[in-house]
Image (cartoon, rainbow, N blue to C red; front, side, top):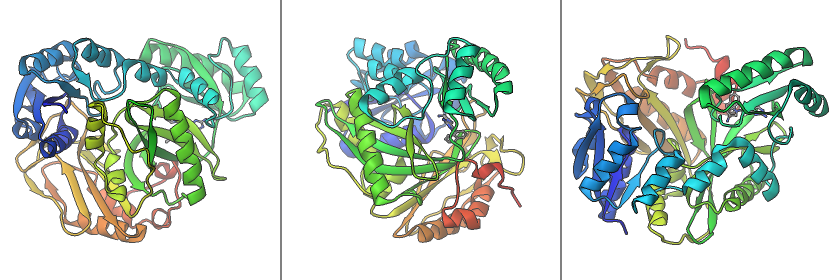
Amino acid sequence: MFKKILIANRGEIALRVIRTCKEMGIKTVAVYSTADKESLHVKFADEAVCIGKPASSDSYLNIAHIMAAAEITNADAIHPGYGFLAENSKFAQICHDHSIKFIGPTADMINKMGDKITAKDTMIKAGVPVVPGGQGLLESVEEAKGIAKEIGYPVILKATAGGGGKGMRVVYEESELEKAYTTARTEAGASFKNDGVYMEKFVEEPRHIEIQVAGDQYGTVAHLSERDCSIQRRHQKLVEESPSPFMTQELRNKMGEAAIKAASAINYESVGTIEFLVDKHRNFYFMEMNTRIQVEHCVTEEVINFDLIKEQIKIAAGEPITGRNYEPKKHAIECRINAEDPYNDFRPSPGKITVLHQPGGHGVRVDSHVYAGYVIPPYYDSMIGKLITMAQTREEAIDTMHRALSEYIIEGIKTTIPFHLQLMKNEDFRKGNFTTKFLETFKME
Ligand code: MV4
């Protein structure tokens, strides 16, 4: 087992990793930018190293600074958390070349899933369902028109270097295709320095359901059930839950098996997530794989009673997994608490937290790095914590969530708490009656 892990991240996930390391008897090194000097992950780690100025490019994305911090502290592994360098194959390779274990998949696995056409091709060969569409990159508008005619409108153009919604265009009829094709390529080229785009049939009003997987260094892969992440706004998830209210045991078995095939196809090592689109007929299609621990991993931890960070560290250290699959034994919901104003288009609201009271009681978990007097810096993402509730049934978990949200007091900044309070009372949400389009029509009262 590792003796000392450097956490190349900040905020709640840095704290989350430190907590598990403490329980495992592993020493921790925090890294921080000058803007995060007073952050809890700095205070709770055994050692802390300043790695640069506030801008992410000068600190949490600065590979040379992070490697220097790992070398001077003698860390034998690096946990990347999520975001920042978590899916940067160059960073994973540099760690490997310096004999520091990157707690995640290899650079090669990251690359195979990072390029969406390569990933889709791998899934087709592995027998995982994908959305019907063209094979590979589009070479011309004429080719695009031909494929669209075959599969039928509406279609969607996606950047092969994209993911998470960047550089996509939905096209409803042939007259719109040329313009969409040109703008999609231009946008992809500008955003990813790769203007390759491909085409799929557009699945209307899908649900976003993802399967948590874990694979070890010996080729064993297991699934750890699903999360429903359909409650999103502009590709930012706001609420996640497990089990999905749309799930059936038959669908879980099928999606679980497909997720295992997907991860096995690249000999996946570490914890990861297979994202699927699910249509109203419960047809499901591979969308992309996240080769990292995710923000919403906690809902899975609660419903299967399992520490995913501990598992991720054990896998990285070479321990085998049992290979057994898991089913939700409870219901868990997570609300993302962001420093944003839900009454003002979710505009970021950084600044000082003057008063703080976090909820507690039966069925409540709070994962957060903030404290009274903490100043939220404007440089990073606006998530300041996650409120997770769990109960025997979905209805009870929602009621516990509403109760916990009503106890949450954060003064000095605006937060997403009022949004979540209203969502927990929304009839369609309570019935499990929602798709990825739900928040497009949701209005704050
Ligand atoms: C789609 C789709 C409909 N049909 N692909 C959005 C993020 C990126 N990973 C892929 N996305 C989508 N791909 C086909 N063929 C709809 C979306 C989509 C979406 C997916 C999941 C959650 C929220 C979404 C919001 C808008 C569009």
